[in-house]
Length: 320
Image (cartoon, rainbow, N blue to C red; front, side, top):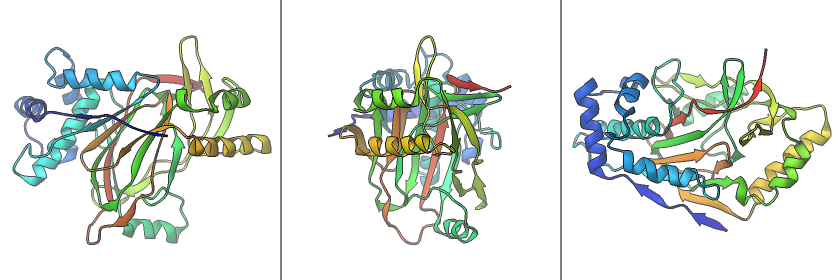
């Protein structure tokens, strides 16, 4: 059964108040690279005066509920009559909401509290010609969780979020979230993999066009860490990329887990659309999306989105 996730619609008054405060303190923005982590931290540090405080409480109620774990947030348009500025204000609002929820990992190249990805047909064709593996908007993205390499630590971040700036498909499908509380085979695979037992993952890089059209790739790595982790307080799940092992039992188990997640009858679902922010409790569930279909012709990019990762998370492996 697909449960329809409730949508939180941010009020225009909240967004306008936040934008006014940002512009007053730090000046207007002309591009996404103007959105800096230090400015957002300064603006959102006092929850009492944060224009998004009521919305953040609603978001936390959903993401912290072990039977839900996802918050679907719509950011209004029409904040500015200038179309480009209106898009930028939507992005700034998404960043402000996420920084209000949790301190965010800063993109090392841009200094922004997010990473921007732009997909295009032209660049995908180049990657295919080069024989490189990558995720396309038109690939089915199976259920997974995300990890973070923080120095010598492998962490499972508390929150992962995706904000769709533009999706140039007439049939973008749904975004899905499966909390472990709804996964019928959770105990079966937890017992099979074991707790805090290392597995090797071969990470598939995400390759997109950068702001100047150049190809940008997240580094493909091999990680050795547990699928199921537990410390004295909480559990976490890491499942991303492909399991690489000389042991057929482990690779078979990983394939069976992938199928179990896809075949699970219950999950949360919400349509993918522009100016929609998906916020997931990354430690307690898996996210996925449909294949994007029926692309719109004559556009430079087929998809443009911002990805947010919280600094806070559970360390599941520490190397020397």
